[in-house]
Image (cartoon, rainbow, N blue to C red):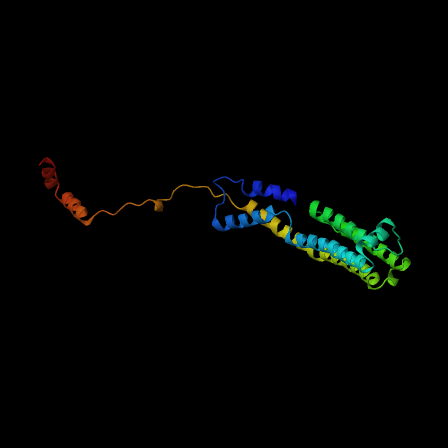
Length: 230
């Protein structure tokens, strides 16, 4: 997509004065240029916002769990410094950080147009959460023992659905429409200034009085000669 953004001006605005200059075509070119300068589609931006929401929402739930369980500072020392796989929620928070970093790097910075990155993050999240629920003692720690794994699992699958069914199909459709427009511009015939036609010249009609005098001189050449001598 970056190459498209850099080549728009050279392909659409690099035409001389003898190129197509119709108003509808110019308006369409300007609209496509404005869209291409963004370099990231609206649906991809929505996906990145949801990935950010995933991280913030899981972080908020974890902070609430720390506060409810006996204070944020005390529980941070217990879950982070004295980490226990069977009783800590810290790894679920790290899992959300992993999804955020991988997806933002892949789809916001590198602007990938393939599903493999979100497939990896979803597969890793699902495998980790399933194993943790089976082996850990989170279900004995109240509502958050159920809430955090379920929320993290659902958010990972929503990200996969958004990318595979919304982002990539929409961008492919936009790419096809954009390419067809560029092909139409390339095939447009060059329209130079061209020679002027006879209809573009205007000569005012002779007055009726002059026409009568000329007609009279033609019928009476002697009168015309006397008029010139006098």
